[in-house]
Image (tube, rainbow, N blue to C red):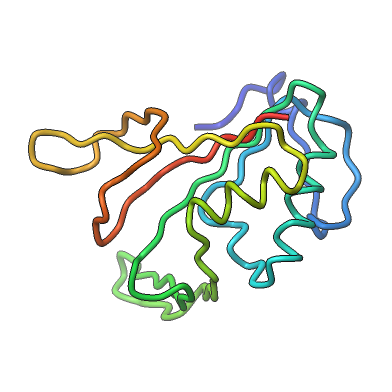
Length: 154
């Protein structure tokens, strides 16, 4: 849905390297859709987390989404498109990721300066599928795939 004009005025598009950009301090940052997995070196990931830390107000919060497939820590993914007229675009987008485990991410967030990093694990419905409800967790099921959020508090 299109944003009302008054809400559009509050949104700014910044095209810049997240490791170098300077912005006003914010209340919350969201690192979703596995956007931070492009940082394959641990030192670069910590540099990214420090930049997030610096961009937050004193009581700011960083939300991170994490998924892990236990077979490998590196993944190549593609997004393809198929249009109503039958035409296709194969490999429209390509992603090469290093998948970090929840404990690695939590440790790096603390090393980057955050005082607390909590893993929120998705609950299951009666069929064993994700139910979209996330609660703080110290343990999770070793499923083939799972979704969790990591919330880091400054």
